[in-house]
Image 1 (spheres, protein in one colour):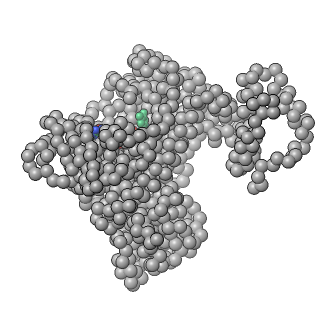
Image 2: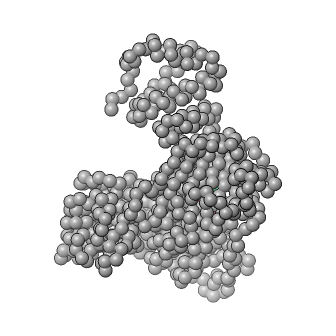
Length: 69
Length: 555
Ligand SMILES: Cc1cc2nc3c(=O)[nH]c(=O)nc-3n(C[C@H](O)[C@H](O)[C@H](O)COP(=O)(O)OP(=O)(O)OC[C@H]3O[C@@H](n4cnc5c(N)ncnc54)[C@H](O)[C@@H]3O)c2cc1C
C-alpha cells in the first residue's frame, strides 16, 4: 500500500471543510473533542493500513499549531 | 497488598512442618536445585524436574495453598503443560470450561468473542478454577513424587551466592537453618524475598484505580461465559466483570475508582448492596471472599542472576485483565526446566540458561504490553485517553469496527518465540502458524493400536522429530536413528503417515495445522515449541538445528 497521501486528494475540499466546521457548531469544547475523536476513529478504520496511520499520527504530532504553540 | 476477610470460606488444607535433615543433625546434603515458593509456578517447576529424574527441595513459607481471590482462568497452554506434569485432567474435571465472552456497554451487549472457534483440540481455550484447587491438585502430584522434598512453613529470609553455589537461610517453627544448592529457582511470588535479598529493582507502572474483587457463592443461571461491562447501570461510570468458578462460586470484579476508600469498600455492609445492585434484588448469595486491589505491571530487568533464576510473579507482575500472570508463569517453568536439566547433565553449556532470559523476557514484555493496554482502556490515565475510550465505546454500539478496539482483557495466549536464538530459520516455504518458536498445536491422532489419541500427548519430555508423509518414511530408514546418535541429546522420532506403525491423522487436522502437504519434518523442543522445520530430511541439518536448540550454535 502507498504511504500517507499529503498532496491534494479530496473531491470537494471546501465542502468538506465547511461541513466539518458546521458539525462543531454549538458544541461545547468537550463535545467537540468527542466528535473529533469519533471522526478520527472512523477515518482510521477506513484507512486501515497501520503504516499509513503511523505516518499520519507522526505528521500530526510534528506539525504543531499555526497560531502559537 | 490487599487485606481481606473470610466470610464463608473454602476449607483450606493444613500442611505440617516436618523437621528437615538440616535441623535434625543428620548430614545435610548439598542440593542440586532448591525452589523457593510453592505456588503454581514453583510446584510446576518441581514436577517437571522430577519427570527428568532430578531431585529438588521446595520451600514454602505458608502452611497451606493460595488463600483468597486470586487466579481463576487457566489457559489451554497451561492445561497442556499441566497435562504433561500429570494433573491436566483434574483441572478440567473440577473446573468450568468456557470459551465465549460478552462485552456490554451500559446494558447493551455490543460484542461477543469465541476464543477457540475450531474443533480438534484436547483441551478447551480456558478452564476456570480457583487457584487453591489448582495448587491442591499440584500438591497431590508432588506428594506422589519421591524426588520432591516439599517443606511447608519454611520461609527463606536470606540469600547468598558465589560462583558455584547458592546458600539460603530458612526460618521454620523449629528454628533457622541454612541450605546450599547448585541452583535456586525463585518462585516466591510478587513480594519475592529472594528478589529483595539480592536488592533487585522491580519497576513498572501502578494503575491508579481500585477494584473490588468478590467471590460469591450462588446458584445462578448465567451462562458459562465471561461477561464484562463498561458503564453498567449497577456501577455507573466504572466497569464490572462476572465469571463462573467451580462449586457455584462466581468471581465479581467491580471497578471503584482511585478515590474509593479500600477499608470502607470491603466491609460486607458496603459490598453486599453493591453486589445486589448487580445481581438483582432476588439473588441469593454468600460472600466467600472480598478484597480491594490496585494493579501493577512490572518486571525484573533480568530473570537470571547467576545460579538464581526467577520464575513466575517474582520475575514479572501483570494486572489480571487477560489472565496472564499464572499462565505466563507456568510457561516460565516450562521454558526453564528442560534447559536447566540439560545444563546440569553437561549436555548443554550454562549459557543455555541465558536463552531463558531472552525468551521469557520477550514473553513477559508481551504479557505486560497486553495487560497494560487493557488496563489503560479500562482505567484511562488522562482526559484525552478517556475521551478516546468513550468514543470507542460509543461507536461500538453501532459499528462493528469499533468493537475490535474495545479492550476488556486480551486473554492469555502462549508467546511465539520468533526471535529466539535457539530457532533455526526456515529454508523452505510453509503456511500456517507453526513457525520456529511457535508452541505446537494439538490435533487428534490415532495411535498404533488404532485407538484415538492426541498429538501433544505423544510428545515426551525431550526433543522430538515429528515427520509427515514422505519425511515420515525417511525417519524410519536404515541408518537414520544411528545418525541422530551423534547429537548432543536424544531425539524421539514420531511419524504421522498411512504406515500402520505411525500415528494416523484421521481428520487430516494434524497435517493441515502443520502444513504437511508434500511432507514436512519438525524439530520440537522439550517444551513443545518448534525449533526448526524442513520439507526434506537431511540428518546433518537436523543435527545442526538440534545443537543450536541446545545452545551449542556452531558459530
Ligand atoms: C485478583 C487476581 C486475579 C488473578 N487472576 C488470574 C487468572 O485468572 N489467571 C492467571 O493465570 N493469573 C491470575 N492472577 C495472577 C496469579 O495469581 C499469579 O500470577 C500466580 O499466583 C503466580 O504464581 P507464582 O507461583 O509465581 O507465585 P505465588 O502464587 O504468589 O506463590 C508464591 C509462593 O511462594 C511462597 N513464598 C513467598 N515468600 C516466601 C519465602 N520468603 N520463603 C518461602 N516461600 C515463600 C508462598 O507461600 C507461595 O507458595 C490473578 C491475581 C489476582 C491478584
